[in-house]
Length: 350
Ligand SMILES: Cc1cc2nc3c(=O)[nH]c(=O)nc-3n(C[C@H](O)[C@H](O)[C@H](O)COP(=O)(O)OP(=O)(O)OC[C@H]3O[C@@H](n4cnc5c(N)ncnc54)[C@H](O)[C@@H]3O)c2cc1C
Image (cartoon, rainbow, N blue to C red; front, side):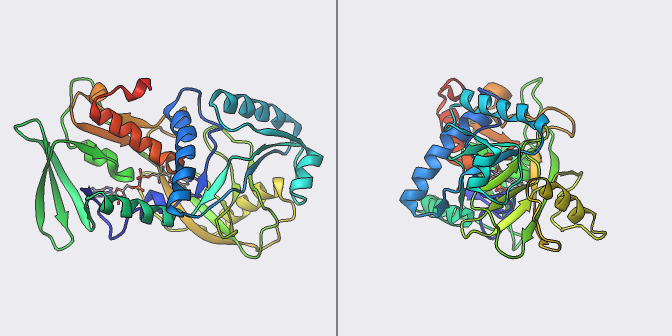
């Protein structure tokens, strides 16, 4: 049984992202983010073909816009090799402009393995899989409490929109609740020394582009620390969006905030480094999304935290924290990893 507080699946983090199937270039070698991204991408592409979920194999250019950024391209290339990602191609300025005449750069990397996906179609296909496998999704139902029962299982208290409360008993529980995970995880008692990670919501704003984008590839600047920079992505229909930026917050809100126009000005400045031809007034406020980060601003980026009994000492429980990007790309591989933990096999050593 899947318990979901909204009326549809994926209304929180999963419907507010860039829809990019990442190749696995940036993450530290051996991290879960690297492993599950590379493996998840392969699985997701095969799944989408079978389930007829639309994918567009756009490829992506990572562009150095100044000589000082060339070293960052070297580092990304080396990192992607260590991660076993699809090989990248190094491009000179001229090569890059043959592919994308409107791009400004001194050098670039081409990631042919990066693609975009119709996320809503994916969510619908996954929902159908749950039903076809005999599962139930209880929509409009909020998990309000969770505890152990006398037999070593769990009792999950769930409140429906009409106010009725049900107690669901289960031998195993997976907390895959995105922005709600730390709150639910915090309701259980653990072995000494284990602490549920703290969540630091990090909001991102997207601008959409009026008119047609002059690019057929996704365009990314070189990353700044743990943030990928204001990039240009396309959806499966070819519409362009710019972003997301990053705003560390104490709360979870989705409003698009740019009353004084400062955000638009910042985006225009960032984007014009690699697309000087961005027309004035072409950016329109778009969507926002919130990343469930488990590290604070300025700290090194944390790996996905997928905790089983080995971490917290509770048999039958797997809890997922900090499932930010590349969580969409990795989703099927994350599912396998969780299943292996529940079966008691050593997923971490696979
Ligand atoms: C701005 C942004 C851009 C991103 N871009 C990309 C990208 O391009 N590529 C990529 O691979 N990844 C990307 N990601 C990451 C990706 O979107 C996430 O990793 C993934 O969608 C997380 O899925 P999830 O199932 O963990 O969370 P969610 O989709 O949020 O699902 C968790 C569900 O749990 C439910 N829930 C929470 N609490 C409760 C409760 N108490 N009771 C009942 N239900 C509850 C929520 O309603 C929600 O539907 C991006 C994320 C963001 C925020």
